[in-house]
Image 1 (tube, rainbow, N blue to C red):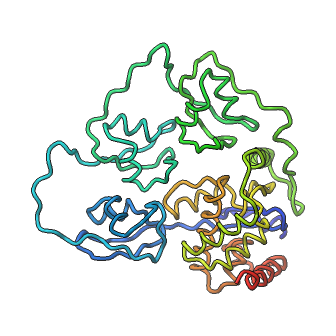
Image 2: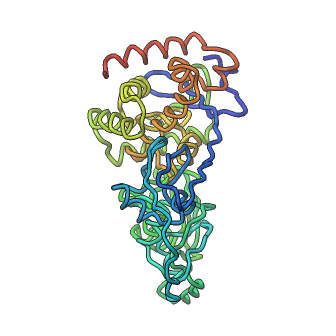
Image 3: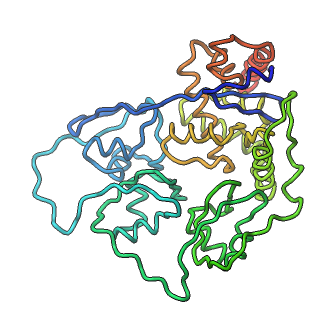
Length: 391
């Protein structure tokens, strides 16, 4: 694809590795417009809906909706899914004064679910259930949480000599959680807990971490020499990418190589299962994943396109907004969810399947404006041929 074609002001550009694919994803605004009331019997899920938002509009709670609809994971609902809602009931007796109403809370940098729950006199489990969070309880700054049973926020516990105030640290290329913890006089477990990291403690360059117990005298964690450089090049198809983007790509590549990832067969199975659960043609999703990475989850491109579905961070944020939870593109399951969510949106908004496939590669706005480039037509033909292999 010509370099000029990739410089689009309103699109997300991504370069795939392994197959030489360059993807530009047009940013799509998705807004939930459901208006289900408490008396409705059923509700059809739309793009952008979350169970917590549906519950709030319906005058119920996430736990009740999940139970009534036999949902094993309240964070995973799909557009088109029909949910049973509680019917309107006769006026009930006043609620006991001991159960204060839920309130809204906007997440700030450094917040954790446990800290929010403690400050509002509730529990982690209640906050997770009310907001449809997954088992890792990912939250992000600026996110608005429903805090059930919240009363007047509890006063912050006074700092003691053994527990210094929480500081913050911006991750640099080459940083590790253990190095950051050591440099700030705290522990890996404390940093992981304070930031809601998963068991593998993935971090990325530019990320701001809360560092509990950090002292003013601590110095920045040194980057390990040469361990995260040279893993990903800085050019592809005649285009050279900015140093910061390439540095992040190398950091992500190093993290994936160090953490260990599922086998190609396991990733293929994840793609197929996720596509079916999200209402996307499993053969299409598998064909795209094979074309992009060969089901190799350690693939990272110079444009910082990550993993099996080759999704860059900004596209991952768009996918997160579509599915209603924060996705970690380094995590195999989240990466697949992101790619499948993007495919689902393109299939629904494109006039035909070839255009949807082309849009995953070239970008919807570019395809609409310029038609398919020659390499895009080859990409579409390859994917459609591969689809017969995965039927």
